[in-house]
Length: 289
Length: 132
Image (cartoon, rainbow over all chains, first blue to last red; front, top):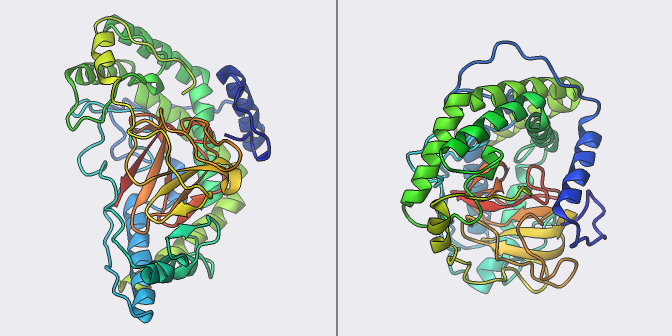
């Protein structure tokens, strides 16, 4: 932990309440003078499938991100081949979207476990010889100094992050995505629906202040299948979300905050969108269309 | 995630049964603050400074893991304590989540990409998952 860029300060003993206060101060700095935005009719939403936050148009979708990852693999393999090594080209699957599980789970069928296909750990890094690792990473043991990528992986990453193209999500899009989440979570309309959800959960035998508090720390979901206790809690959670229209309220309020923030950062976000468009064009040429 | 979480009723007994599933190792990372290929590396300080913790697997809950030295934060808990992150896996995107159990907002970090300051999960990193 460090405190908002003061990286030389260790602060292990700060109580969580004080940390929260510091975080709120940081939010104010980043977000500027946002006031609670008005919202229109609040739709009834039982899931986040098929809906989008405004900031998503400035970020790669999960399918686009997979294409970018494919290009990284292709460029790395080409470079390794030039060094006389074989290197497998992999194809990524589309991952989690911005709204997936953002407000907690909306389907209790798998408890709090991730849907099948989303949990796997990466395949172990293939056993490379020191010479291969040096070509791949610039270090015979594969050690990397972040921010200074080397070897074929570094070269591939650099190619995807130059000439006006942005590799990954731009910092400004991340910032808006985050500030809107924090601002909406603290908004009185969202806090009110948290209170309704909490009362509903209490009736079901659970104590939690917000959907961010479940599952509790004490409940492990590392088992291959969800436990009966986990399924029961998830069922109550989702039922209470539906009864209170928690997803509809939170999504609508957050959307309003995002629109406000997007207006405030319009020029930076236009550049971010151009960087994404250039990236997708570059990626298509690498992947062969 | 700083709000304490409590259970009532029968769920306590059920939860106690699984609390024994502690991480196999309390330390994860390198001794020189570099990040090994294949790992997602969390750093105690911004800009990849300070002690490091590297994980090549999905972590439902960072509780029980500590940063490895040298440097600022060595021996401190990883959970809700990381400031920056470098994904040193060549093929997989990592999601660092605000809440344990892969919930809440997440910082998605592309392969071979870093965040010099975590956004959603700055001092709020509770779990991580991968998509490959």
